Structure formats: C-alpha cells, structure tokens
Image 1 (cartoon, one colour):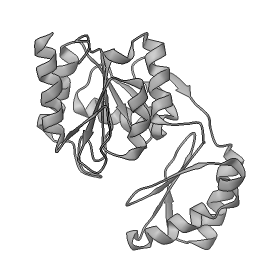
Image 2 (cartoon, helix red, strand yellow):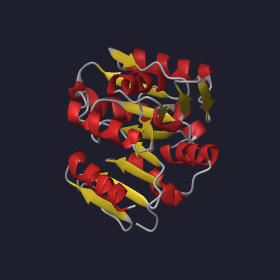
Image 3 (spheres, helix red, strand yellow):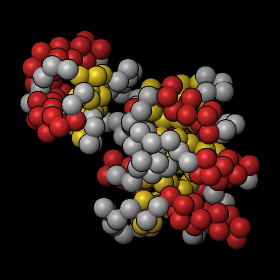
Length: 232
C-alpha cells in the first residue's frame, strides 16, 4: 500500500460478505465492527435498497454506517437521514416496463427501488427467459439502460449510474483521497469502484486484472486490511 491512512472500507454484500440470501456470519460482523472502532468509516454498497442496507448495518452493530443502495443509485446516511439520489429511471418508464414484463412473463417480483428496476422470477429456472425478455424491452434500447443479470434477478439501471460513481460522490463528500479507500467486491459490477481506490480486494478468482488483489474468501481479505492497520 502506498498510504497507511485508510479511512473508508467499502463492502459489497452478496457474494462478498456472505453468499446470496445467506446471513452474514457473526464473526464477520464482529471484525467489521472492530474496523469501525479503529476509526474507519464503513460503507455498505449493493444492488439492494438503501433502506435494506441501513437495517442490515444496524443488525451488524455498525454504529455510524453509510450505505449506497441500488448499485449506487441512492446514497443514504441512516443517522442523519441525509440522502442523495443519482440518475433515476422516470417512474412512468418503470411502470411501462413492469406492465410488459408482467404481461409477457407472468409471475414476477419487483424490488421496491427508487432509481432503477430490479425484477426476479419466482421460478429461477426461467432466468434465461427473463433476461432475454428484459433485453428486448423497447425502453432498454431507447434509453440505453444498463442490464445486470444475476442468478436470481435482472437489474435495469440508468446508464450513468454505477457503484463507482456513487463511491466518487462519497469520496468527494467526505473529502478523502483514493489512497484512503479500500474496496471489497466479487463481481464485474463492483469493478466500477476500482478507479476510485488504490486497493481493490476481489473475493474469488472469477475475474483477475492488474491492480486488484484476489482472495478466496472474505476472511482472508479482511486479514489483509487488519494487518495493514497494524502496520500504520
């Protein structure tokens, strides 16, 4: 590391701190609380809603969290209720897409978002079908929306939004430098944050690139940060 003054620790949730739809292990929450006690600002960033992340942070025992939900579309401070939304998909456009998807696909669940549309099939065996249908929506091409497909949902996102853009806003708001930030992620969606930090820790080996450290599990990645803090 070029600088030992780490101030922000940024964590993706699903696949990083825990498996998708799995509870974050108690000992992992404890290690993150310890990081906060050492003076780090903990930031949770995910495709899930900001309100969900705020509740998750409270359940983890984080006292002063900052969260960025909807893959960076909504930045929220649960303590003072400060909120900033980035670009949004107009509500009428979201409703148009919901109508088409409900009509042409059937049994779906829509995440209650503020800036984007997340849609999940109740039968996961139909994910490929849903992905094709979403990509064929006229609104997707008309507005050049981005599509993120996971094993249980598809996201339709404003083209300018990303976790990286949200992290840039957070960095500027808190007046910290790139060398003050460490990021933990596990998918290509998280890679947009790489430009906003000098330490990007990737959980797993599905992606490898210059300037990124790969770790087999979050425990090992946290150990790197903990050892770094001991050295400063």
